[in-house]
Amino acid sequence: MVPGVRRLTATNPSPMTGEGTQSYLVGAGDLVVVDPGPDDAGHLDRIVDASGGRIRYVVVTHAHDDHAPGARSLARRTGALVLGPPAGGAYAPDAVLADADVVAVPGWRLTALHTPGHAPEHLCYLLDTEREGSGFVEGGHRPRPEVAVVESAGPRLLFSGDHLLFSGDHLLGGASTVVAPPEGDMAAYLASLERLLRLDPGIDAVAPGHGPLLAGARAVIVAQLAHRAERERQVVAALERSPYATSAGLATTVYGDLDPGLVPAARLQVWAHLRKLATEGRARSTDPDDPGGSWDAV
Ligand SMILES: [Zn+2]
Image (cartoon, rainbow, N blue to C red; front, side):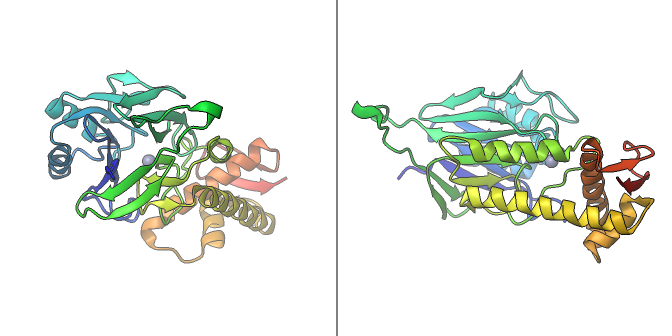
């Protein structure tokens, strides 16, 4: 078995990044790096060492500081091209990718999927293989490709299966992603999750930007949709009990006691739900664009 994907974890742990950003090396000759992470020399050294210097493309899921700023440094060191969403912050691509664009190295193919919600320009990448000898045969049956993911430091096999989704911050391992307005959009986030469920062939596993690999992708996405629906019900219930509430006040009701480091994110989640409810005519605010605005149920 030729390992197709290697995972390297950046050394930027925090309440918001888990054990650190997950960078992935894809391929078995010329390589693609998915999300180089922060511009951290030690982490980039490990990526370059693991690659044998054969990085052809650096693809980025979104421009946030824990995912993208290493891209330009890595490109300078390896001659790779940086591909991904439009420039933002400390990130600038050589070419912008759009939905359905394909990045390929021999035997491996990454298809960009526009998945707005966490960030408006967020891209996930769906990986499949085109092994020698595979392809369509009589009757239209295609031998099933197989992708293996190993821990670069190990190597320890993490996953072996077919279609793997690099999800950036759209889906996380062991946590729910932050949907923080005004950049984050809860309605768009849910629509992007539902789109992933409709993909044919379906996704087998998710390689997230933070946290462990997620097997059983369909169940993971369904659970995330259910979690968000439950959170929305909690926000509506809290709003009905507390007229003229702020998102900060509602967050205390909905989330209870939280690690202080997570309180700002919790308030933003509630605000994201309120803005979604406002577009549906179920909540109103003096100013939906004001994070400190007061809200009422309709
Ligand atoms: Zn992010």
